[in-house]
Image 1 (tube, rainbow, N blue to C red):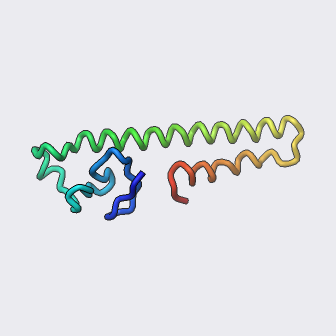
Image 2: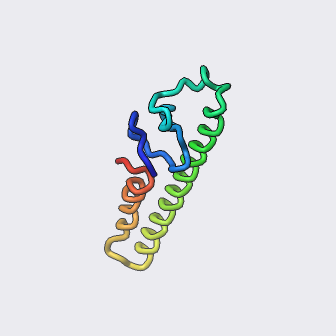
Length: 102
């Protein structure tokens, strides 16, 4: 992963344009997608689609992590563990790892 120099958002290595602010890494400037949509190098629909896919995958992974955390807490409570809530502490950790922010 690389970071956008304009907005500091994580960008996949295969993208040349930041999905968050439309900063072009090849041209070193923010691109007006509507104005330059006819340009072959700027394919806004591909950028938006890839960015949407990344967000969707991250959200799905986070939901799975939350479900696993709750399952750990339930199993801990049913087994007589003194600290069943410890599984719930995995949720903010998963959020930090997946989305890279608090």
